[in-house]
Length: 137
Ligand SMILES: [Cu+2]
Image (tube, rainbow, N blue to C red; front, top):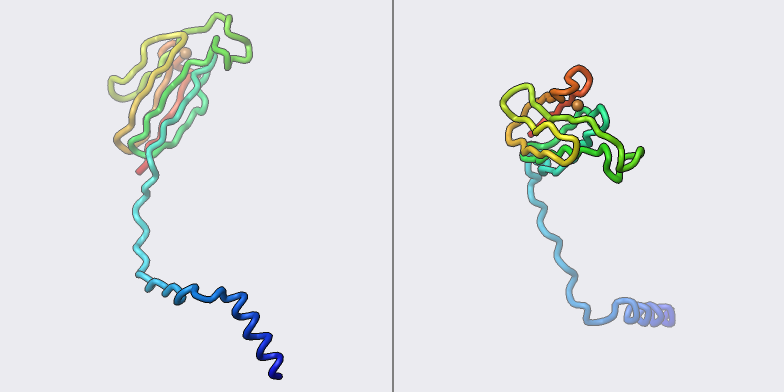
């Protein structure tokens, strides 16, 4: 048994490293804060304005987000190539006076500072080019 105790002491010297100092005390546990209301960070998001559609059609973003609509027809991301003739489109909101110009290329952006549902459409193709931005807190 003496040899066993000596082996244990040697193992401890090797494993404990000697001089490691006292063990770090554990922090007292603080009471858990109640969950904060949704604190989703604003995001910058892109909606593609395609040949005759918006993609995605419905977009949900936190308050403070900036949404950019990018006309993709005739760009390098257009599967039919960059030389195609592109119809003009707009991003025009149902309420308020926000609208992009009528354009065949380029981008339009809007920052959403209030929660709500913002429906929009294309004035050139109002029956089937419609979209919605849902802004949440
Ligand atoms: Cu259009």
